Image: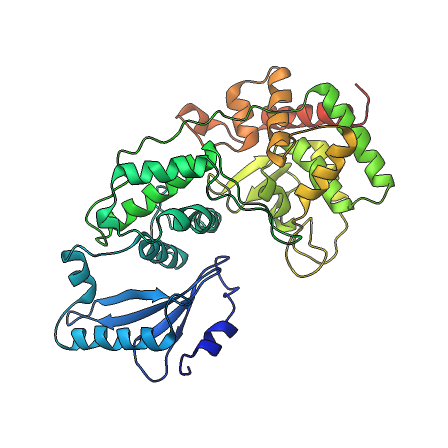
Length: 412
């Protein structure tokens, strides 16, 4: 613990522990309760105090860069003085009509959810992957348009106006540097951002932080779902490009991941983060500790099993380790883009490969329930919960994977 100064704050880096991008707090050695929250893209001054009933409160004073350390320290002294006189500054702000800004309630949500203190719809703490996406939408789209607004003064028209601005590209940004994607707008992005904002407000209402959700009743923009998948002819083209790329020293891990995505219908991160301990050889299945729809065992076909068995064991816990460090491989999108450019294919993403697996399975005559089980979709009824990993399901996974493998190898 040290005295908070401008130099000290600027020297801080976001914590790498726990949820990616989660905030960590730096407390002042001279003024008890005064601190700064260090986030992935922002630093905010905070003051923390305790009420006579033992309840702890934290109030955001302002953002570093928009106010100086000295200004924040003076404001913290005033707030702590009010507390000493028996007042609750957070409750005072609410009752006076000031209350939280959107920035502040987003900070509250991200910090509390990162600590596992907010329960989601699954009746479990919000998953790290969900929180990462929420943080991205908040920082890229919600804060720039609504962050400065006081929640109590927001009207539904303000929020739907922000949705329209995101759809029109008002918050779009080009790619910066050699890594990371561009920030894009569009109808789908706008709709999902509003879902995130609505959810944050609902959590805040439920936990007593704000009185009402100003986004309740919002009409989200209906976006046209993407229905892209590869035809059989396109799979053959992709197979040729994969073989050519392999001969031209394209990244072998990227090539292997592309093949696995096609042979299994896995989601991108399910394939990239696949750990060796999750493979159940005897069951021809993967025991995912967590997925978008929770922990599950998912059957895979023999071609996919053989592909995984052929991956060299470098000592990493992952089947597809990163080129450096202890993490998993992440460069799949760029490898796929290069190979699809070689093949003359457009609009192909890892999710398109997942759609392709489902399309081939449907073309082979498998039912929606079977395809849903192969893809790991959430159970939507009593009947689907009785579909377990049995021989017919293993046979289906192998039949679909073998068909796609033959197309890739040009045997069909």
